[in-house]
Image (cartoon, rainbow, N blue to C red; front, side, top):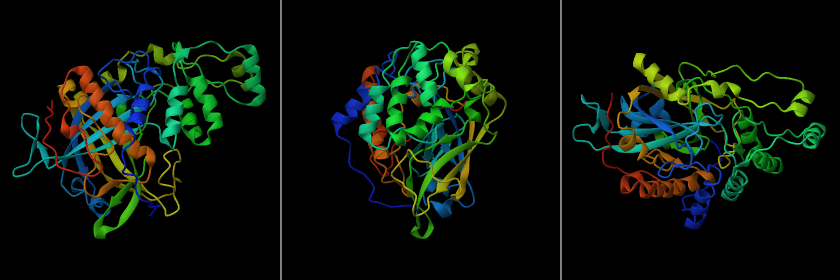
Length: 401
C-alpha cells in the first residue's frame, strides 16, 4: 500500500529551523511580528466532524469511530503578511479535531463526561504539491523568493523569452515587490519544483474559502481495522463545489503576450480588501458550510517521500467523513491565532511517513509558535508543542456563535 520506508522522526537541526524562519522575513517585508511567518492572516471557525460508515475500517483513530467530534478550522491566506484577499496566493485550511469533546450550550468545547480531550491536526492548502522534496532546496527557494522591486522586463528579455519558450513570470496588478523572477529561474533548474511553479502561475482567486479544494500534500501512515497499514494523502473538497471569483484572464497570442506582457489580476484590485472573510461570515449567517474529507490511497510503487509529486488520479479514494462548519469563532486571538496547528500532532492510528519535509515541518512549526508567543508577550503552552505521535492534552475552549 505504498512504499513504507522507516519514517523520519528525528528533529531538525535548530540552526536549520532558525534559517528557514529567518529567510522568510525578506520574502514578506511587511510581516507583522507575532503572526505566523506564512498564512499570517486567518479566520477561525467552529463546527463538527462526522465520520462516514467506512471510516473506522481504514483508520482506528477515535474521531473516525465516534459519532461526531468538534472541530476548530482556520481558513487563511498563504502569504506571510496582511496582503489583501485579492492577491494571488495559496489558501489554507487547518483543522483541529477535539477527540472526546463536545460543544456545550454556551458554545464552548468541553470534555464529555468522564473523558479528556485529545487533539489532532490536519493542515491543508489549495496547491496540491509542495515546492521541494528536501530541506536544503526549501531554504534555497526561500532565499530566491526575497522580494525585490519589480521592473518591466526589457524588450530584449521579452524577445529572448519568446525565442527560447521560457516564460517570464506574470506581473500581478498593483504588486511592486516580488521574488517571482528568481523563483522561476530556480524552478527551471530544479525539476521537482516545477509542479508547484505551474500551479502557482495558474492560480485564480477563489470565490470563497468554502468553494476551494484543499490538499494535505504529504503522505501519512494510516492504521486501520485488523492492523492493516495504508499510505494515504488527505484532501478536503467543498460540498458546494469549487468556484473562482472571476473569469480566467483573457488569452492573447504568444507573441503579443511576450512583447507587451500585460499585468494580470486587475480584478483582484477591485475586490474588498477582506472579501473572503466577509463572504464566509455572510454565508454562515444563512447556513452551515460543509466539506468532504477524503483520502487517496497509495499503490505499492507510489513515492510517499516526495511531496512535489502528485499520485496518479486513478488511485483509490475513500470518503472518511464530513466537516460541517457552523460559525465564526468569537475570540479570534485566544481561541485561534494563539494556537499552533502542527502536522505532527497526530493521534493513535496515524503517523508521519518517510517524507523529510513533513518531519521537518514539525520542528519549524514549534519554533515559529514559540517566536510568535514571545513577540506577543504571551506564555508558551506545552499543549501547543506536540511530539510526533499522540498524547492527551488539556481541553481547549472555543466559543460557538
